[in-house]
Length: 132
Image (tube, rainbow, N blue to C red; front, top):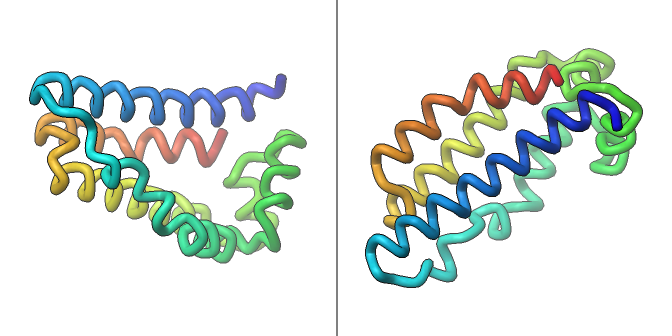
C-alpha cells in the first residue's frame, strides 16, 4: 500500500475512533446513552461540505480526488496541479472540523478539556494529512 494513502487513512481512522471513544466515555460518565442527533454533523451537511472541498481543490469530482490519492498524490499535489493555494485547503478542513467540535461541545457530547485538546491539534494533523 502506498505510504501517503496509509498516512491519510490512518489519520482518518484515528480521528473517527478517538471521537467515538470520547463520546462513549462521556456518555458512560454521565450514565446516559449518546444522543442520536449528536453524531455526525457531517451527515447533515455532507454534500455542501463536499462541494466546498471540491471547489477549493479545483477538482471535478470526488472520484477524481480518490483516483489521484490512489495514484500516490497528496491533497497538496492535487491543489498545486489545479493552481490552488494549499493553505486554503488546510484552512477549509480546519474550519469544518472546528465547526464539528463546536457542535459536539455545545451538545454536551464533548467535555471542554477534550474540545481544547482536539482543537489544539487540528491544524498540525490536517497539515500533515494534506501534504501526505
